[in-house]
Image (cartoon, rainbow, N blue to C red; front, side, top):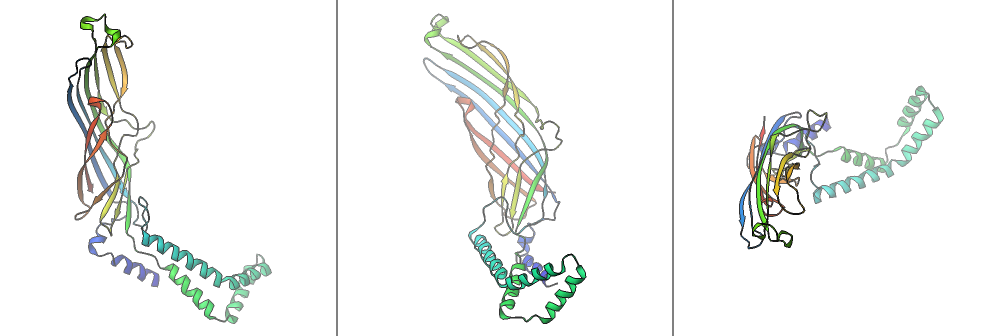
Length: 306
């Protein structure tokens, strides 16, 4: 009863606003993410002019479920005070074990004397308890054990992804020339090249899996923020590539390509301005590459607790 009362008081100490950020285990949430990148460019160069037009989009809707609220975080490093508390509890546990060592040795002697006889063990332990003197050292050990039994109220809650679905689209065009010496026999002494990349449809799941995803987010009810990794495709996305070229070392033709939509697995830290029911934000991530393949991917996300 005393332990239950302590736990209730710890929860109450979070305050009403904090408690509202912790949901019942199993509560559902939905995260919708829109990834988009578009670029139209022209590189004027006397010998190697280039132009490009690129559009890449991806939309993912993922479902999440809440774990049981916990006192310690799983997606963030422990705070200095938490580390200090852990070290203090370790020291208290060692202190209690040292103070209880004589009693534990006596218990081992009883176990050795009685063997597998439960009746013997019960009788000897009862006799030991009746004759036992409560020394200051044992009282101190009891205080240590009581201290270890006190736990912090729940502060964090991890939400794990349970499923996702989405679509993507890729529509890209590249055109270029070069005045490479190998092109001297070409018209205007230039080699020409054009490339199209097109693809899209539903984002596939890994083979044999109906639900997939490694995204998650964790609520800190005290700091009123979230650490979140956004959902991304679990398998590579493909597109069709068509090349028309008279470069000496590149034949024309069709092939399959990988769709580089962009995104990031870097966790986001998001402040919770009010409650957890509806949150949204916009992020921007650099996409590496040459010309139209490099730039900034815009990521718009929405989190809704069902």
